[in-house]
Image (cartoon, rainbow, N blue to C red; front, side, top):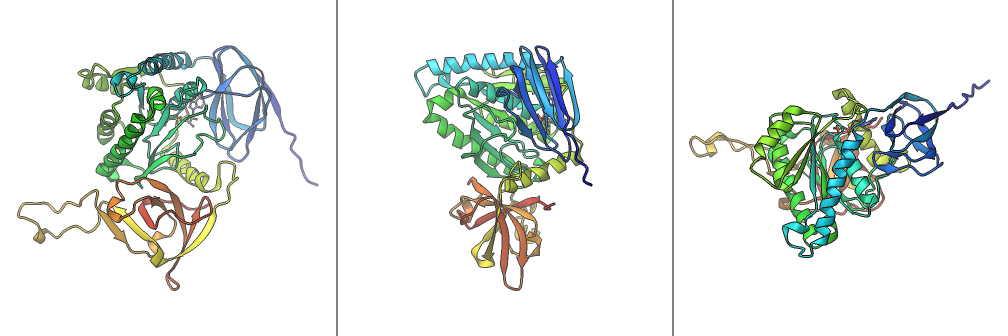
Amino acid sequence: TAVTATPTIKQVKLERESELRIEVANDMPLRLRLLNGTAEIFGTELPPEMWLTFPPRLKFAVFTWYGATIEMEGTTETDYTADETPMVSYVNVHAVLEGRRNRAKASSSSGSETSQGPRVIVVGPTDSGKSTLSRMLLSWAAKQGWKPTYVDLDIGQGSITIPGCIAATPIELPIDPVEGISLEMPLVYFYGHTTPSQNVDLYKALVKELAQILERQFTGNAESRAAGMVINTMGWIEGVGYELILHAIDTFNANVVLVLGQEKLFSMLRDVLRNKPNVDVVKLQKSGGVVSRTSKVRQKARSYRIREYFYGIANDLSPHSNIANFSDLFVYRIGGGPQAPRSALPIGADPVANPLRVTAVNIDRDLLHVVLAVSYAQEPDQIVSSNIAGLIYITDIDLQRRKITYLTPTAGDLPSKYLIMGTLTWLET
Ligand code: ADP
């Protein structure tokens, strides 16, 4: 006879300014609803009495400002309540940003410095809650009718598209606690690797491209200019990581730097930015609820993220399998490539590879299980400066028939025949 597990329903009463921290089980979703009071998940209010289904492994907190009762159905990895949170300091930051947005909106001269709303950059080590704080600030702003721009520079755990990409998208509504950021028209650039050291110059070049496009969009749009942006960054804060934080602050003209959970980084940034009176550097406490992930867990999270891109968060998308001839597609790699032999160079010159050089890649079995970006470039020499339409995943290479089989999240022809390859691979499990 079959064993039927009776679903366990549990009620949790939350006092004001406390939160219920949950890690959903590894193999089962969790259902949850707000029974009474008011509560939010990372800045987005919960609808009253509506059951929401959270996918396996999700880690989140239900926070209440004034008290609430939550009902849960299913099992969790962990769940506990905490009354010590940094939420008051976070919402105070939000209030300051609101003031700046209102001032920007009120100033009529749209080209001037004063019509620019806050450009917030969130920095800190891995697992300090950067993505979560970015999300709260965006959702609180959207709730008040602003359309701030979310910029995600984190190639390790991208929250807009997939790892290896940097991206920007306007946030028009509070971010859905289950579905995450809605992807209507994100502006995405493909870096192709999950660590910045792989090609620092390329990373900087893409950040610059992204910033320039946004700057142009802001010029013609007073509303999004006043709403400003929230920029999430990577967890690398030492060496080249620190250099890239400074590069991002500079390139985006950030005027508010929020430093999470690291005294040393805060004091370094405060000192180096001292001569920029328009830039505020603010230290914020890391939430005790932020879950630390080992590099193995992070690696796994990247893999799930790629899966979600093709199959949907709740496995609700059905990706399309397509077949193309070798001759229909052109695959390129950025950086590296064959170097000039020393004998061909002037005396004393080192044969360094050009990090932004675009080289054609032969289609062979090495492309199997690789994730490629579909560039909007019209010509190969525009590949570095072009954003991408999306990603494809190579599932088969038939050398005899010279055919490639690949997966796309939606049906239809590829918008371009130029594909970019990095070191991003995925094994479908
Ligand atoms: P970072 O961007 O600095 O790497 P994240 O914001 O992604 O860190 O947080 C790491 C993990 O911790 C995420 O899975 C996030 O959902 C979770 N998390 C953050 N804050 C809380 C909290 N207060 N309660 C429970 N989980 C949290």
